[in-house]
Length: 76
Image 1: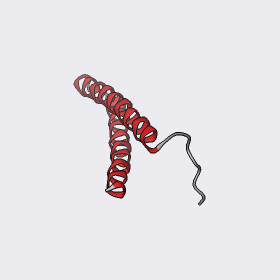
Image 2: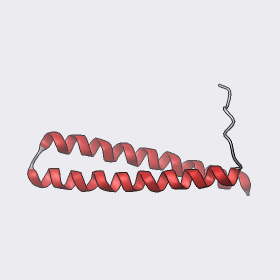
Image 3: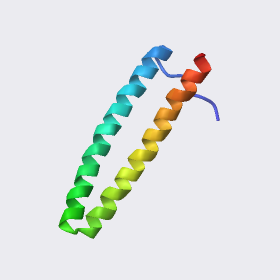
C-alpha cells in the first residue's frame, strides 16, 4: 500500500498527534464519566454503549501512543 505524504515537518506531525491524543483523552474521560452515571442509574443499554466507547478510545490511544514510541525509537 503506497504511503500518502503529509504536509509539514516531522515535528509538526508529532505536534498534531500530541494534540489528537489530548483530544481523545478528554473525550475518553467524558465517556468514562457518562459510563459511571449510567452504572449509577442502572441503565444497562447506556452502560454497554459507554463501555464500548471507553474501550475504543483506550485502543485508539494505545495505537496513537505506539506511533510516538516508534517515532522516538527511529529518531534515536
